[in-house]
Length: 200
Image (cartoon, rainbow, N blue to C red; front, side, top):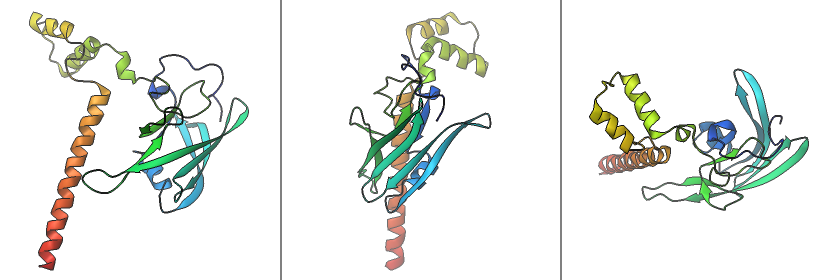
């Protein structure tokens, strides 16, 4: 795998500047089926050109993922453990265990200059949107919507509130997750009622 692992990791890199393995990706979820064991490879492309690839071996019964790749000319073999939780609405949810922090995470990253995969917090990665100021994001959104009128009161609001439109990525993700959990809970309840009505 070329382009990664050379040199020292830079400070304050963004999540978008490296490679990512995300359990929210349908292809990743399909490959990591808990009922099977398999091997394969994942590739990353940019503008139609392959920029990186890794091989993986997955043991479903052991919930263990082994990554194999070349980093800065040296072969790397990194084992990754997965764990699962039981949401209150039923079913199971899988997580990566960060090799550095041990915490459950949905995604692992390989930033520029790094040799092993880790969580966003382990590498202190930020989202690109967090690199922009709240004032800049708010102003840009107003301009895109055609809502900027030069109103002094609006200008004061933008100056006082570092994130007036609630653009924080983590909060947005938490809101989406909670909404998804509620939808799934309602769907399961409806299915149970339908099954009960048929059997009755």
